[in-house]
Length: 66
Image (cartoon, rainbow, N blue to C red; front, side):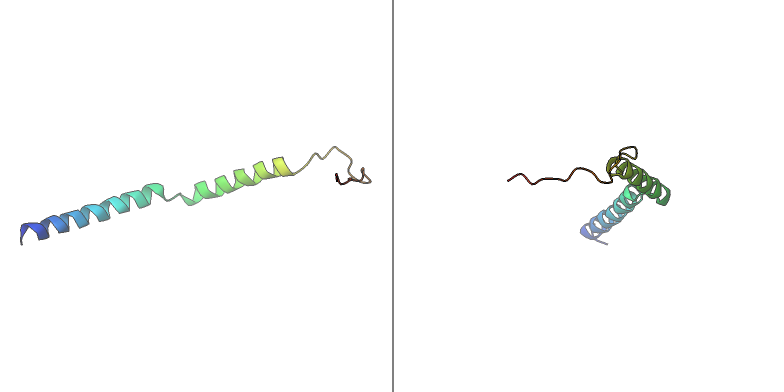
């Protein structure tokens, strides 16, 4: 084999190896995805859930500011 063919083959093998390593490092594990989604859900409920101790039935009517 000629030198350019060997160099191209070596470069292709190294590129595939590098992509495989990046794929396994960057791809999240299934167990971490679920815990992350659970944390996001709890944080959203805490932020958007409102205050359960405040009475909101028959509250003050909102007036538009024109």
